[in-house]
Image 1 (cartoon, rainbow, N blue to C red):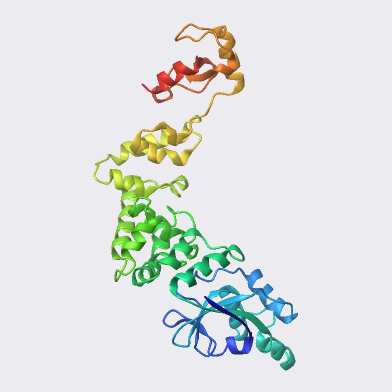
Image 2: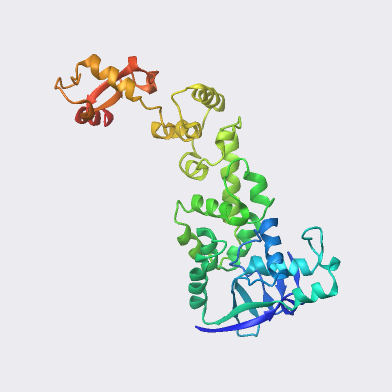
Length: 360
């Protein structure tokens, strides 16, 4: 890959700056694609954005940026999108810093900003080399998420359409599933979640297969089905439902019929059970009956000591004597049958007998 360092004044970068949904984000006399398809949305907070302007106004150095040179004479921002947009938006009058818009500055102050030299590495190479650089320079600055890096590798018609649904604040996926899915659309959390669900965790395989598919209709329809099934199966919403692995549950149980009133009654009981320490785990437990999701409250050291002394150090199953450190706590009456995590319901078993009982 060929790399060349150049100084580019802000006035050149901000020339013909456009930021809209139809034309994308461009500048540098319409020759610079500031937000290529593999790039993230603008994520700088006001303080970060203002710090860029303050740095330039004080003539302090900004970090080096990277542009990719295309064969047709255009360029793409490889690293530095957030700083570039901050500068261009300020020059365009989109926001103020310390109550001063660009047009409020004196002519000398405006010229100082416009003449400020950005240090830009121009990179030339094939797609593989460009993406390797993209991954390498990601070790600094606003670190990309795993899904943002996947977007860089599998950019294409499918990804462009998928981002239309999943990668926008207040977009379709967010408005549909904000109560059920964690994360931020612009950091690609919604897109990652949807692909993980539909692919059973094989995200890169799914993106590779669909890279040049014309649209993401399959993924969007699937995601809508998951959320619809969730809201119908668990009809009473609780905040603990946010972040549950709904897609995995949908894949396994979507064809099973449930009495939603019975489900709601059991959920209410489990929510009140003090032994259930992970309330969000109630939802997968309802369908799978695996107690591991509930993180049943463990016996305290005092409970274990009380039971050990009551037993005289003997395992009630094999009758042999063990040190306390060689034994494990067990519910006499199983939690699933109403047994509580209390000293009265605690027995100390040797490790071998406890494993044997657990495997039954």
